[in-house]
Length: 483
Ligand code: ARG
Image (cartoon, rainbow, N blue to C red; front, side, top):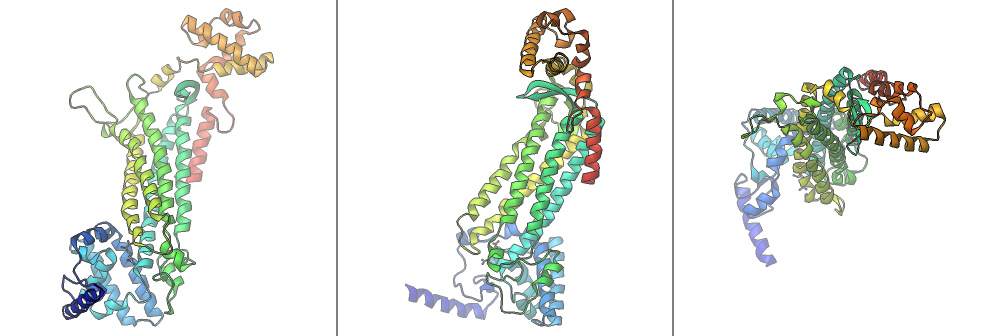
């Protein structure tokens, strides 16, 4: 069995060396593998359909590597120049859609290298000196994800700007604030939107923080042990905009934390977006009518002519599973993998690319929806009539003015609410006599704190909903976030 296989290998090696470009033998392997890959092997092994998305980073990394090799005297300056020219041509070919990607060449790295050989000949073979696809792919992927993070941060900034603009406009617009989706206390719409500014600020910070750890260059870790060539890893790291090289060659080729961190941060961000999306869905239903979504982000019904469906918001609400699933999928790929690189890790890109696309689209759609959103302050104010939103203000007044323990004040207020419900009016529309029937010491002065506007205006504690606080929070956030 073994002999037979060896014999076959020898035979094909012979054929391959006669015809290095034969489709039957993958020439990148120097003929070591005999038979052309079975179609199934090719299907499971090849990643080119996915990782061609890394072409720009792959070429950028190769150029930096070639120049460093020349500077270190490992290849000649002429070879480096020829290699870089060839790589630039390949980049153009890919950008112009003229490049023919080959499944047989497995991945972007080998597709580019094979094409380089076809263009520049012998020097192409020198490019892979002191490098492996293991450090190459880790470098490419980090470069790609760094751009992605920067893009996502920019997208978050756009959404933050839209939220801040609306929050500023509606710093005085009162609406019911909810807990358990039950009317709780009056707030301003601006304050409510500023809650999302906080969430998205944390999302942005998480991405920026992940970027710091990502921004180290694996290039020069080679297969996993480093290299005997006198390379300059600082130089390639600097050329590629990294803060420096990774410290351990084994970790460098085996690590995908940077992708996991991106997916985790992205998942949390989408969880936030889904909550806002859900609120938009609730707010825009006509029986609530707090907002109207713009036509651009609404759809009609094929049968009910009156409908305005918040499809974009619903789809954002549905997206977090993609990011959470991507995190889980990649985490399961990575768990239990022995040091160092294993082909399992090739799955990282398909998972991450799809997740990044979902995040990008969701952020773009949400920014657009918030920018175009029309709020209806009258409907929000009208909704404040239900639910005795200033009951807490009454209890606080009893504490402040009558010296009642808060628990007793809570009890008294509860009884006032029962009276108001019997009379089918909000507590602030009760007669003084009604209030005094529950607690005789209540005076007419209480009405000063029972109105919606008085309640909102009184909440001046740091982080509170008072319009002046909201305006200050918007200004502070604009300055801090630079948006
Ligand atoms: N396509 C591979 C990946 O994405 C590149 C690295 C392959 N390395 C190897 N030793 N087979 O992971």
